[in-house]
Amino acid sequence: MREERGAHAGKDSSVSGKTVRPKRGPTDRSVLDMSARQARAFFLKPESYCRLDLPPYFDFGRLLRPVEKFLTIKPLASLKLKPRDFEDVNYTIYSNKDGRYAWRPFQLIHPVLYVDLAHSMTESIAWAAIRSRFQEFSKDPKIRCLSIPQESLTKKKDQGAQILHWWQGIEQASIDLALDFAYVLHGDITDCYASIYTHSIAWALHGKSTAKAKRRDLSLSGNAIDFRLQNMQHGQTNGIPQGSVLVDLIAEMVLGYADLELSQRLADTKITDFQVLRYRDDYRIFVNDSRAGELILKTLTEVLIALGLKLNASKTTTAQAVIASSIKMDKREWMRRRQSDRNLQKHLLLIHAHGTDFPNGGSLLIALDQFYRRLASRKSVHNPMQLISIAIDIGYNSPRCFPTCAAIVSKLLSKLPTKKEKLVAVDRIRKRLDQLPNNGHLEVWLQRISYCFSPKLTYGDKLCGLVEGKKMNLWNDSWISDTGLKRTVRPNIIVNKKRLKVLRSIVSRAEYALLRTY
Image 1 (tube, rainbow, N blue to C red):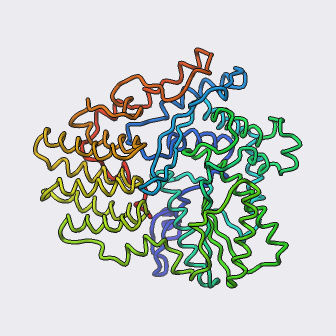
Image 2 (tube, rainbow, N blue to C red; image 1 turned 60 degrees about the vertical axis):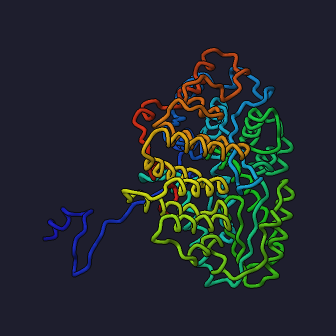
Image 3 (cartoon, rainbow, N blue to C red; image 1 turned 180 degrees about the vertical axis):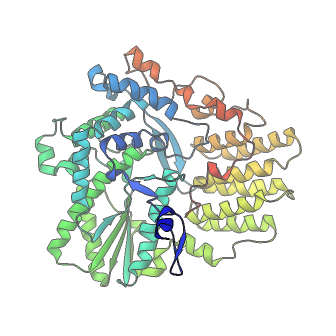
């Protein structure tokens, strides 16, 4: 019997009336748990290069692979090129943050410069030094960073693993800490990525005195990173390009250094009864004494100012009850509200009302996903144009949600009986979106839902132009004098034509649903 049980190891079995299940392995891993080779492969994944939600026919791996192959044989430093002398080296596409006037510039870093930066950071010595420094940043268990880039070890996308990491590490951990602390204070850095001083990266990795004494020494990994970031930005030292996992880790270097400085300064205050959770530029400070919380917040402000950063006054809150503030207000309100209606239009109007109160909120994404699933099960839909109008207005005012809204619209367009009616609907949507400046990301998704029935429709954004088959220069290549290297940078190949050919008219959940687990 013992031998028989052993032969079935790994499967569910019953021993002494108890069910024994196989242990599940980890579902994700931190980039800091990777070897230099593994980290390089992770950073060069298309999903790591571009964090912006784009339709599945955009495949940056088709571009990154030949560039990486070239630079492995002939490193960029050996070519003596000067990209910093040129403007618009990166391609910028804007995403709206609040449905009004706040814009977040996402940059598709020039692939040559991106691969060069990834190579530099993942050289064995440099990567070992980076990992070692992060260990120092995390020595204080009272100040925890929960935003180190994660790689999914399942079929889930890496961004999905990252979101789940936030949910478990921030929201659920905050609820748990309510047993230990009576108050929590919230803080958020203003325009974090745009405010990071590139020289502070070397301060973070090597200490301020060492970095200043050796500010021209490119053998220091911090200086090497700083140099390459300036190459991407016409020599600018203010701000880092947002939109890739690689640069996310660079931001974590500076913020980890701030964590270390905060820990050292708080040691002098003798405050011991606290816990700080940080996810990127968002802070939660848990205390039992509200005055102690205010002092920690003041100390954090001083640390950030020394790095050229500052807390957003409008998003900084004083002490409040832990449980009540552990879950974001938009999510609490959506849980409180009536979430659906038997009538599809009334259901979507409920979501619209929630989006008006909480534009771009995570709960809005979830509500729209739920509506999409309900809509997908319907064989017929009454008055689809009215529903299209509501969905577009939600996406217009909450552009973060536009991919999900586009999926809903694609389903509704399928209910229109003729191609002519669909084209009229798309034209009306285009005119509505044209009222919003910097609408390139929205155009990309409108093209996604119109392409199947009208592939020749033209749009203004360069990414759309690539899909239309036009030759577009996303990046300024004027600084590349090596003809072999220049040949590797062919923007048109990022559009996978095979995927375009099998594209379905209705956008699937797999194309947008990063938050399903959340």
